[in-house]
Length: 362
Ligand SMILES: [Zn+2]
Image (cartoon, rainbow, N blue to C red):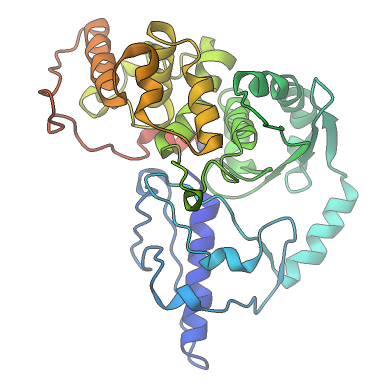
């Protein structure tokens, strides 16, 4: 889940409202987080993103503040690309308010961002704590070594033909909402949340974002206009959580059976995203295809996702595998569960897109 992107849609609505009725501006903004932040982008006070409303051909102007050049251009606001099953926009614009610009620059100048190299020397990682100076030492001594060490590891876990990993990425730590979000090679993390999670989830959550930086599906794999098939959102989030919970910190038991015991089993789905899908990916890796994650990732970058990837070693579709996985999980957890009848999906409740885990794991 990407709180920031939800926020910018709110901003888009503000601009649109202002343009529609000059002189009589009514500002409406809305925001979803936690379990309300689903791929449907349904808001209480503003309409959902659409490609055929008045904003589709609107010309956007920033009336106060300046665009942060590190973000996207304004035309991203109505480029016609909407999230589908995923609850993720791949681009965002950032506007620095007129009054905040000077203050931000003054602080930033006082505390230069930390610049480190990934362990293989191929990627420059910048960590900016100027918005949360108390986290500077933690970022240097705890976070930076993990991001540096894991960059080449994640690249090796997710290889594909012709892929070049980004030569740089940045992490900005500052007070905000939610947990963290990634747009392209820019990670933003909420300092307020990190402070509470320093001894628990802070580093793992940022490792998850580092995987997003390396996935790079936004450029080609996500381009349906080239006839490509996008990786479904539950895998875009399931892959980072698989790497995080099963390879980086298996000792935390954050997505394995220990975690699963605390879940509402009837709602658990292979395509439930995040930790549920991470558990499913780990099961397929162990039972059928040790390269499944690498294959899914390579297909995503090439825009060639499809059920044949699952079938290659197992002979089963994702859904068939999902039922088998859930049946075995039920047995292990000693829970009574009957798989849906063949060809019917009715016993499977619709995914409770981003479930409770999304609140702590964007
Ligand atoms: Zn994510």
